[in-house]
Length: 248
Image 1 (cartoon, helix red, strand yellow):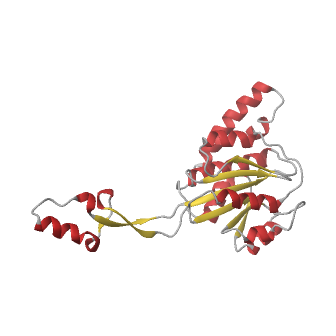
Image 2: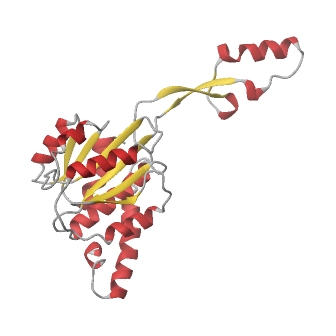
Image 3: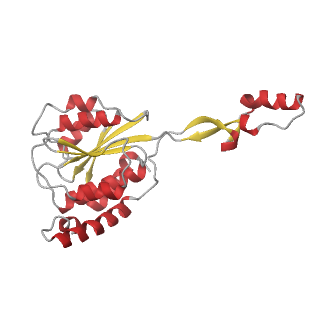
C-alpha cells in the first residue's frame, strides 16, 4: 500500500508515503547477517590485529628480541585468522511492463537487503529497453536514497535482458572483489535486444528472483549461466528468498 501511495497524484501524500515506505522497507530488508555467506579461508595478519599467533612467521622476531635482550616488537608478530571473502553484488531490477505496489515494494526490499549484505560493494540498475544506474558499484549513497529512487520507478518499455546483464558486468568490473554476483529481479523473458544467454554466461555468478508462477524462463536463463532461480511469493518473501540464494 505504501509503495502504491508513493505514486499518488497528491504531492504531500506522495512525499509522506515515500518517506514512510523507505524507512519501513530499509528496516525489513535488514534481515539476516550484514554480509553474504561464503567459504572462509585463512588470512595472514598482524598479531596486534587479533588471531592465532603464527610461530613460524614470527620466529625471527622472537629470536632477534631474545638475542638483543629487548622486548618483542608486537607489531612485527604475525598471526593467522579466518576471514570471509567479500562479495560484490549488482542488483538488476526489471522495470518493463507494469510497476505497481507489489513489484515496487519487492524491488526496494531487494535493494535494502543487498545494501545490508554488501554495504561497501554493490550496485543497483533498473532496466527496460534502456538501463539506468540507480547506484554505481563504487558510489557511496545512503540506502534510504536508493530505496526512495526505486519507489519513484514507473514501468514502461520492452525488456532488454542482454543490455541489462552487460551493464551489470560493467558495474562489477569496477569492483576489486574476486567474488562477483549478479542478482536479477525479473521473469527472465526478453522482448528486445539480443539473446541474453551469451551475456549471462559471461558473468561469474547469476541468481534470479522470479515472480511466483512465472519463473520458467528465469530458471532457464539461470541454468544456462550455471546459476539458480527462486520464486518470490510477494515483497515479504524477499529477505528469505535472498537468504536461500546467497546464504545467511
